Each structure stands twice: as C-alpha cells, then as structure tokens.
Length: 482
Image (cartoon, rainbow, N blue to C red; front, side):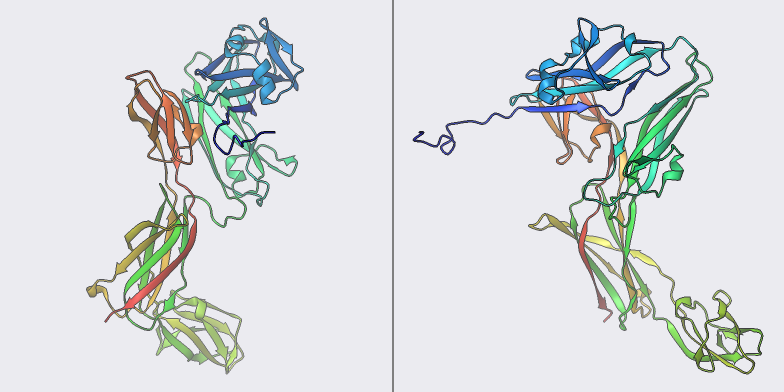
C-alpha cells in the first residue's frame, strides 16, 4: 500500500494527447466521369502530429495497399484509423483511381497531436477526375447541415444568400431542400424556403456552360443561411424594441436610457427617443343626424375636419348606443354610417396627434462591466430649448444591429519562424479563414495561432458577423423642463 499520495504532492503527471476523427458528409463525386486520377492532400503535419486516411465507398471502408484499394474490415474509431489508416504520401502516390468511377467517395480523416505540439495538423483533400465526353452541365450536392439542436424548437429559415463567380456565358444556380422529422422535401428555389421550418438543410448547385474551351466557367463562392433557433422572436441583421407611448403630463426636456446586456465586439446597440405634444380629445361630439341611408359626416366642429385623428380611438354612437357598422377616412376626416332616420350620431376620438420623430440619443457609458460578466450601456438626450413646445408624451426605441463584413488580405505581421498569436479585429467565421501560414483559430477568444517561415508577411482573409444581442434588462427615465 502506498504511504504517500503522489497526486496530492504533485510528484506525478498527467499527459493529454489531442486527437480527432473527421468523417466527411460531402462526397468526392465522380458520377459522369470516365477516369479518376490522383488525390491531392494539402495542409500540414508538423512534428509531433499525425494524419491518417481511410475512404468510405458503397457503404464499405477502403484503404490503399501497395497502390490498390483494399476493403478494410477493422474499426473506424479514431485510434483504429490512426493505427491502420494510410499516410498522406501513400494516398497521393496512387496515380490512377479509376476503380472509383461513378462513385461517391467519403474521406475519413484521423488527426493526432501530442501534448507538446504547438500547431495542430490540418488536411484538405481533393480528387482529379475527367470525362472524355462533352459535359455542358454539372450538379453537385453539399453536406446535410443540421440546424436543430436536441433541446430546441424547430428552427425557422430567415434567408439564404448565395455568392458565385462566372465567366463567359456560364450560369450557376443553387436550390435547396429541407428536412423535418425523417422526411426531406424536394429541391426548390432559395426564395421558396424562406420562412419554412427546417431541422436540416441541403443545397444542390447546377453549373452550366455553353462551351468547353475554357471561356465559360462557374464557381460557387459561399452560401450564407440565417435562421432562428426556434424560440427566437426575431432574426436577421436588425431588431427593434419599442416602449409604450406614455403621457407624463409635464413638459419633458431630458431622457436617459440604461441597458444591461452581454458584451458586444462587433454588433451595435442604438437608442432613440420620441417626444410629442399631448393629443386633443373629442367626447360624444355631435356630428349629424342619420337619414336612413348611408350618410357622410365630417369629424370636427362647424364643418371643419379635425386633423391627425388617431383611428384606434374612434368610437361612433347612435342615440348614445355604440354603432359597429361604419367606415371612415382619416385623411379627409370623414365618417360614413348607416342608421335609422332621425338617429343622432356622435363620435369620440383623439386628434391633433403629433407625428413620431425619432431623435438619436448619445452614448454616455459604453459597456461598463459587472461582476457577472454583463455590461451596462447608457444613452441620454436633451431637447434643445428652441424645440421645447410642451412635449409631455414620449416613448423609447432600441435598435439592435448585427454588423457583418469581409476582411481581405489583412497583414497580421511578419513571421519569426516560431509559433505566433494574433488577436483578430473581428470574430471571424473559422470556415472562411484563408491564411498563408499553418494556423489554428479559437473562435471564443478570436486568437489565431500560426507558424510560417521567418520573414514571411502573414496575411489573412475571412468573413465575419457580429454576435447576437442578449439584453437582460433596460430602463428609461425623463426629467421635466424647469
């Protein structure tokens, strides 16, 4: 029995290796091709790391043995693939893969890095295929992208944006299908799936050219899908919160708004205040006597119509009893009603209502931190003296704006030949990063870790989108004009 607890006194050590298994959901599709050439594998395998490859074809697993594909019957867990899979050199050494013509090939990639590795291994695999017959149209499907998480309601698609590049008379057309339960819909236009609920989505792109001499070409650059997470009420780039219009019965001069929210890096919050004079009211205003047919009366006194009538407050009475069958035109201040002859018609409503005029508030406090990780932002606005006309009515509008953009060939610095770290200006989407170094990226900290030959100018390009807003609470206060 041990007399000492080695872990308690720090005389033992843990060693954590890092490894991962990637099974592609996007096939290398050789349908319609007449010959298949060699694989190309890019990326890096730094010291202390491994990359191993297997392939799934026709629901069987294959590996290369002496340059030929042989069915593999071992395990497909990460340890088995690392132990038995092909190296990148063994895969790319096979020049002819015509045995896989008219097949869909799914690579299986195992990655490993020991505890001392400073840069993770990376891999990108492609396949050369050719057709001896003239091909003027080609279609390709993406992976099936899961949108729903286990505990969430079914997401709803807001929009899908596709970016493509063409030369000559080439055309690129993308359609999509959605999945709910175990059922996939038919492929349809991107406009047709907006607003639909979807647990998963898949895209199909058709490339069409008029000639095969190289003057026509098409390239799908990116697909961006925006969707709610089921419970979300709003989605997209903008959301707005309005307070209730309130009459404070005192002339208002200054307004302040405080918002407690999660910290923002790229996204923006703006605040606006609306200040109006109080509306006037009519209560049981006599407007005429019915003749038994459809009569038109002016909403006002002495035949002069009141302006800016609030239609939501309009109520009509006949001999003091409510009348439901009437129509009105607030532009001309006229009311049309049918009632028995001799019935006295009266109306109640508010009028002379100010138009909303939103004044942007200035930011006084920008993301003051709290101990729980939330922050406070405060806005204020003071009405100029020359614009003070007894405004007692007010409400607030908060605008939540989610920014987005693209960074192209930004210079991070000069490589020193060793591991370097850079904090990116924006929250990059990892799958859009293009960097001329061996790199890894932490999306939470926005830190890019990379290695490049000494004196190399490190550049990066990526797409970014601001984070979603989380507002925990907000409050507004007004002070009267003294």
